[in-house]
Length: 170
Image 1 (tube, one colour):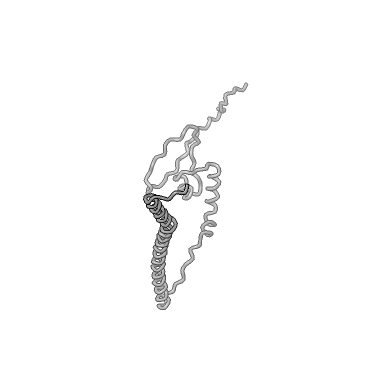
Image 2 (cartoon, rainbow, N blue to C red):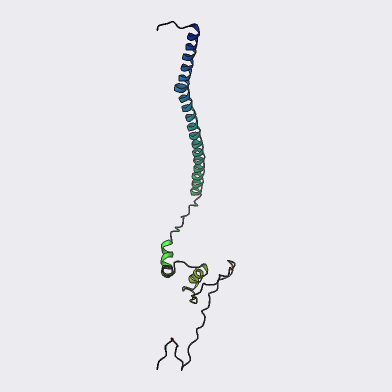
């Protein structure tokens, strides 16, 4: 089946070859190169921004160094005090911290008023031991001083009375 192609077939084949070549050029050469150029432009913009930020920082550092040099030249160099007194504070308030840690180990939480009272007086406020749900707390303004709750007075049995445990002795 070796027949010769008609003119129409030759033209269509030529158009097909040209289309394949254009598509191959676009996909294999033009698109990857365009993507790489776009990435390089983005990288260049990021590097330019970083360079500008570093230039601003350098200018600020030069101003600070110049100001320090002026202060030193004027004889105004002061020793910067050390503010590392955390160990001294911890040693000073070790008894408060220990008591607070023991309270938190037992109760797990502490109310703000109780904490302020403990810091001021060195002991926890005395609360009545209620088996019923405690009443809602009164909301106070922060500038009001907290008031420690007063314990309820328990009634003591009279001299001749014995506590009634539900059992009678004979």
